[in-house]
Amino acid sequence: MNVLEAIYARKSIRKFKDEAVPKEDILKMLEAATQAPSPKHQQNWNFVVLTNRELINKMADIVTESHEKLGEIAKTEKDRKIHMSVIKYYTCFKNAPAVIIVYGSEYKMIEYKILKENNASQEILDMLVSPQSAAQGIGAAVENFLLAATDMGYGTCYMTGPTHAKAKLEELIGFNKPGFELMSMIALGVPQDETAPKPPRKPIEDVVTFID
Image 1 (tube, rainbow, N blue to C red):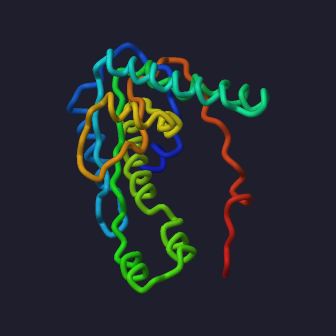
Image 2: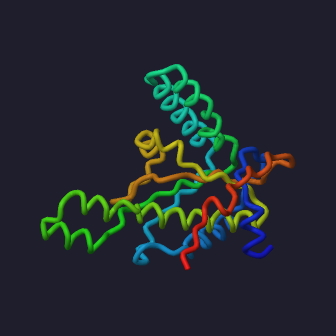
Image 3: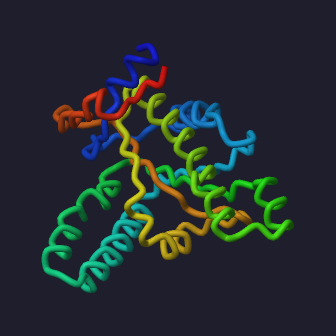
């Protein structure tokens, strides 16, 4: 499978076979992840691999509890129903034999330091950080992981929704590295034989502008 084939074959998988993913295969995917570009080559990522079923189930319980509490404070019944309708997508990682927790650190910007020391307005500082460079670096690494997994015959689901329970998840996982926080997670495993089709993408003409 070449790169383009992997790109078009990749889709979010939420149903997995009860098969362990060998550690050496996970390491190959993580090696691919670390080949991603990152702002100023800061490589602001760190990965925690969970295969402990008890821990994964506890994570799902934490996300479920957080999700339900958010639903309870919705101002309208419509909002509550919409919010609760996606809970299965936020907790589908509990069906995976492995979950990769992606941590990220702050992107250190010399431009920010220079502007702040010269009393730049908060508006200018906010504009500078609005591209969210740290998150962009994490996203690039995750995509490399997803494509490597696809090429190797595995299924993945890239998830940021569960981060509404980030504080409790971080406490449960117990990964402590100064400056790093939980950014996202990836469910990983051998996909079941029948999985949902890849949803359609927007027409290319709706998302591309050429300026000649």
